[in-house]
Amino acid sequence: YVSIISSKEENNLSHYAKIVDEVRTVGVELPIVAVGEFSIENIEAVMNTGVNGIALSESITNAENPTEYTKSILSKLYN
Image (tube, rainbow, N blue to C red):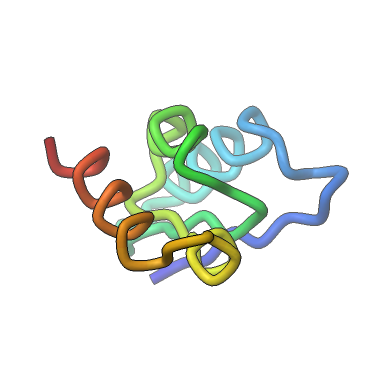
């Protein structure tokens, strides 16, 4: 897989979409995972950039109830 890791300055959706486009243009078909400061509120927007996955470990770890938060994430992704 290919990870896209961004600094706070780069952590915007156009940055992810541009990288996904560049990677696909050169023929790389590996899954692309976005790594940044994401939360359940922006999952859909991040996934719409063309990435195949999103790293949410920090938001899960910092959640008041990590188990319920994770269930909410999975529901948002797969429903």
